[in-house]
Amino acid sequence: MRNIPSDRATAMLSAIREFQHLPPKDIETIAAACQWHRYDAGNEIVRYHDHTNSAFFIVQGEIRVMYHSLSGQEVILCDLPTGEMFGELTAIDGHPRSATAIARTSTLLASMPALDFKNLVYSNRLIAETILKRLTGQVRRLTERVYDYSTLAVRNRIQSELLRLARNHMTSTNAAIISPSPTQTEIANLVSTHREAVSRELNNLVRSNLIMRQGHDLHVLDIAKLTQMVNEARGSF
Image 1 (cartoon, rainbow, N blue to C red):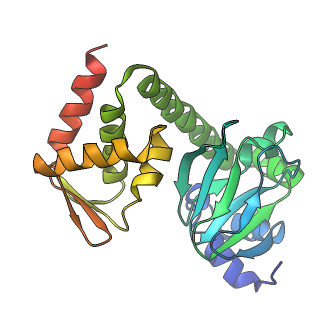
Image 2: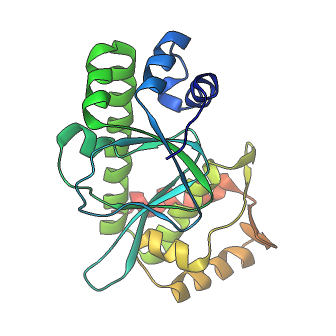
């Protein structure tokens, strides 16, 4: 746990996506209810099925949300950068954690106990609206992911994941640089397959001039074509 000066705490929390349009007085109220935590890369923040109940705000660094199947396979749900929040589901419904969160990099988090988080949502219409939009967005993304897992071949799931990553790293209207690129094992864990299948499909996309690997970066050269391929695969069902 760390002590953060109130002015610095307010400035950092202003960067949280759900708080960006709040007046400074509201941010100060939020900061007063938060505790601060530093995690090194690889440190576990919360564990699947534990009974902690705080919501977390990422003010520095990046975290990974994941769990392990009964067979021991790692399943990556998402990576969350600075400005995001997590843990709000347990803060709202009081159920055990639905996934494990670990720090991908050195990470500074603000945490808010469930009672304070719910009071914040109940008392501030703007925050309530942003949280509702966040939750509905998660449902839509999970619905799309379930659809992909249920209907798409492995190669198309890999293409879909690359497209999702590319859209978060656009460098022009039709190109992106994913930097650093996830490893083949990480991509496999994101789409529930094995590393060899990812390697095979990445090589196919390189030969088709859709992607280019350069050092630790992955260049997506034709987002429109990749989008077309994914949409055609989805539309065939």
